[in-house]
Image (cartoon, rainbow, N blue to C red):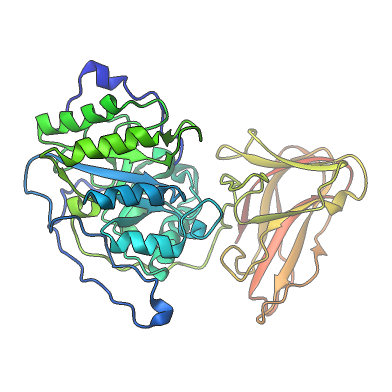
Length: 433
C-alpha cells in the first residue's frame, strides 16, 4: 500500500521541485549486472555498470528508502561521501552533456561514486521538460543522454524526469530508450513497494532550504508504518545557495538518524531490478534539436544547441512567452546597423546539434521582411560562410518560411532566420524536412 502521511507532513516541505511507454507492470525480478573492469589505463575512469547497495538486494517486502539526487551538481560529491561513510547508497540522476561543466561533477568523480556503490542514472541531455517537446526530440534527449552516459562508462538503469514533468508519451520514450524506471510525479507522500507504474514513480516534494530534519524523518516513518517506499529528492548542499539547497547540518543529521533505523536503504535501480538493457540506436534527426527553443542552459540566455552572433545596442535577442507551440519563442529586434547581422542559428558543431541537410523550415511573425540564412559543414568538418535565402514578407500572423538550399556533399547544416530590414521578428518551431 502507498505510504500515508500525517497532516503535518503533507504541508511540511514547502519547496517545490524546480530542478530538476506507459507501463503498468510491476517491477521485474532483480537481475544483477556483472561489474566491468577497466580495459586499460585509458579507460580507468570507467565505472561499474550499476551501483550496488550495501546488501545484494532489497527485502522482498517491508519498507524501503531511496535517496535520490538531481542534476549532477558539484557539491553532491560531498553528499555522496557522507553516504559512503555510513554505508548508504544513493541514486544520482545526471546529464551526460554537463559532466565536466563548471559547477557539475566530473567523470572521474562520478566514476568514484559509482565504484563506492552509488547508482548513476539519466536526467535528459539538457534538463528538458519532455512533454513540451516533439517525440523525436524527446528520444534524442532521453536516448541520447543514456548513450552519452554509457560512453562515459556507466550502465544507467534509472531515469528522473526534469521538473517532474511527465505524460504518457514521455513514459513511452523512457521505456523505449532502455530505462527500467522513471522517477516522476511530485507531491506523493510515498510510493508502493511494488509500484503500479514504474515509469512514473511518485515522490514527496524536493528537500530544500526550508525543510527541517523532523519533516524528512516523517517521510521515512510513514514508509516504515505502511511498508511502502519513500523516494526522497535532493538537489544542492549548502546553507545559502537557493531554495533547493539542503542545509549540511540537516542532511548530516538525517543520515545519522537513518543509519540507525531498521528500514532498508536501496538505490532505485536495486528496488526496481532488471538487467541493464541496450541503448537503442538514435535515428538521424527529422526535426531540429531544441527546434521550439524551449531549453536554455547558462546565463547568456541562448537556447541549447544554438549560437548567437551580432548582438549590440541596436540589435538585441531575447526569449518571449508568445510562442507558436510550447512555452517560449525567440525574438530579435534591430533598431540600428545591418539588420541581417544579428543571427541566431543552430550550433555549428560536429553533428551533435547540426542536422543533416534538407528543406529548412521555421515559423515567424515580423514587422519587417525576413530571410533564412544557411551554412554547410563539409566531410572534413569545415563550415562554409553564410548564404542568404529569398526575402520573405513581414507577417502579423504566424507564417511558415521554407527554403531548400543547395547542400551537395554537406555532412551537416546550420541555419537561422534574420531580418532583411530594421524591425522585429519572433520565431519558433525550426525543422529540417
